[in-house]
Length: 228
Image (tube, rainbow, N blue to C red; front, side, top):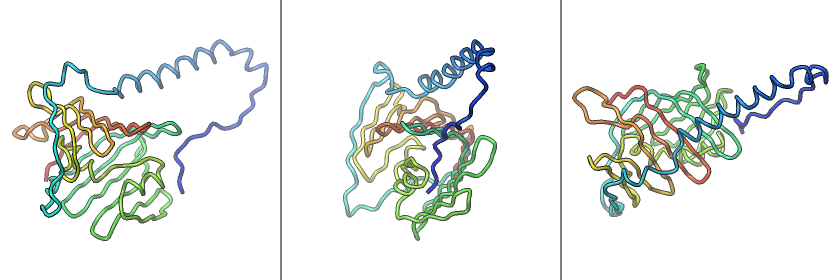
């Protein structure tokens, strides 16, 4: 099992060196704290401003005998950051979604492979940077076990396009222009803070999405949309 939690190394510096540079060490520590914590507070809002919500829509799941509405096909490139009580991760991702399959590649900021996640009719597979392969029936439980955080792929294929999954009940907050600004579904809170068109003649699609589940925070920034 791979653990992405980074632990500090035990290193001992000479006492004289610590004393000689103590002001610089303290200053550097304070600057590091400011850099680490201020962006997190600024980019991970707990909820949209109440005055931005014009309408809240409640949707019921489709009937059991109703055919599911598949999410539209897409191919996107972007950035991802993950944070919870015990770990954090940031990097890049590529996600190709088709009606019958998904392929998600996770990279470090320097472009090194972290994991490849695929889902198709045969199930779910996750391959790590060490070329270890793991299998499961759903992405959420597999990523939580191997990566340490859950990726809600079943809902995310819809949320990433600014809509709710038709399989379960949901709440959607809309602004005065009927643009979705938040979705609450399956225990997840999805907040949208920026939109962009995939093409000049296409509707606006989410660019910056923040997902919240208990203590887990996932931020997705889509840099390139390609609608299939």
